[in-house]
Amino acid sequence: MGYKRRKRKWPGPWKAVRRCVLFFTTICVIPLLLVLLVTTDHYLRPLRHSLTRHEEDIADRFFYVRSGKPKTNKTVVLARLKNRQRHLYETCKALGLDKVGNDSLHRPNAWEFLVNEEHHLVWCNVFKAASTSWMYNFNLLAGYSPKFLKKTKAVPLSLARKKYPRPSPQALMDAMTNSTSFLIVRHPLERLLSAYRDKLQYSMPHTYHRQLGNKIITKYRKATSPKSTPTYRWPTFPEFVSYLLDCVKHNKLLDMHWTPITEFCTPCLFKFDVIAHTETLQEDQQYLIEKAHLEDIIEPQWKNAGHGPTSKQVRKYYSKLKKSQIQQLCNLYRYDFQLFNYSIDGYLELGLPEENMKGNNASK
Image (cartoon, rainbow, N blue to C red; front, side, top):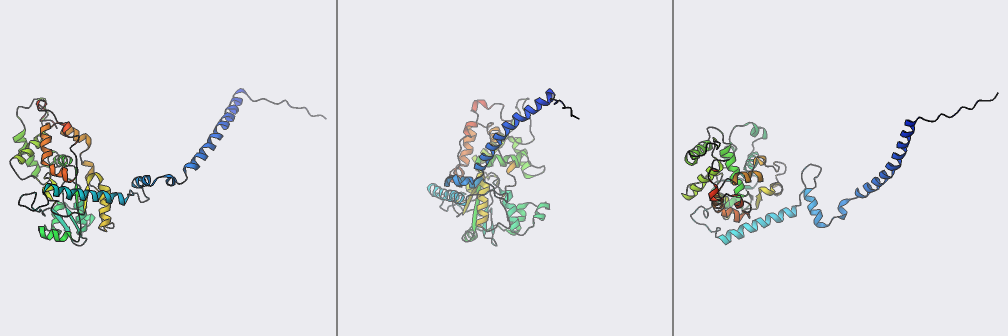
C-alpha cells in the first residue's frame, strides 16, 4: 500500500515577517557584540600604565580608595603648605609685622589659642574658619565623649576652656617649640559674610548678637525708606557694614567673629607649622591629622561647610554695597589679604556707584 505524500504547508505572512526580522537582527547584533568585546578588553587593561607621572599625581588626588576617603598626593599638599608658610613669614618681614610692639598688630596675642599638651597640638581658634569642627576635635582630645558632646547644651568653647586655660604669650611660645601648631584661614570677605549671616541675620532670640542687631537697626535703618522696601527684623548687610566701618573709624573694639586674623592670632609673632585654607581644607586637615598622629581619634571634617557663603550669595550680598564700602572693607582686612595670599578680584566689581545707592540700603 502506498503512502500519500502530504503537501508542505507554508507559513503565514506574519510568521514569515517575524523570521526575517529575527534573521536580520542576528546578523546586525553579533558583529556589534564582537566589536564591543574587543574594545572593552582593550580599555580594561591597566589604564595607568599609559599615564605620565604628572597625570598619575593628578589621578591620585581624585581617585577614591576602597575606604571611601579621597586619596591625596602628600608631596603636593606638603609643597603647598610650605609655600604658604614661606609666603607668610616673608610678607610679615616685608611689612614689619614680625617685630614686637605695643599696638594690636605687634603685641603677641595668645588669648584665643588652645594648647593640648598630651597630643602636642596648638591651634588658634579663628571664628568662621572651620572653628566649630576643630572646637569639637579639641573637646574630643580633652576627653569628652562623642555621646556627651552630642547631647550637652553647654557652649563648646566653654567646655574647651575648662580643659584648656588661656596661655600667656611666653607659655604659648614654649608649647609651640615641641608641638604641631596650626591656623585655619578663609577669604576675609567670605568670612565676614559668613559671620554676618550666622551671628546677625540668623541670630537666636535673647542673645547678645540679637541685641546688637537691634542696636544696628535703630541707628542705621532710615525711617525714610521707600514703602515698597521690605522691613527685616535683622540688620541688612549694608546696615551691618555701615556699623562695622564706623567701629573702625572710631577705633572701637571689634567682635571676635569679624576681627582680622592678623590681629586675632598675630601670626607674624608665632611660628605656625601648618596654615590651612578652607578652600583646601579636606587635604590640609588630613595632612595635619597624620602629622600629629591623631588618625585614630579625629577625622577631617567641616561641620558648617554647607551653611557657608557660595559665589551666588557673595554676589547677592556684596552687590548691595557701594564700591567705596567694599574698598574700605578690603582696607580693614588688607593684612589678611596679603599674609594669606588672597585676592580682592571679583568683589569691587560687584559694588554699586554712589549715585545708584538710593533705596538699596534696606535690601538683603
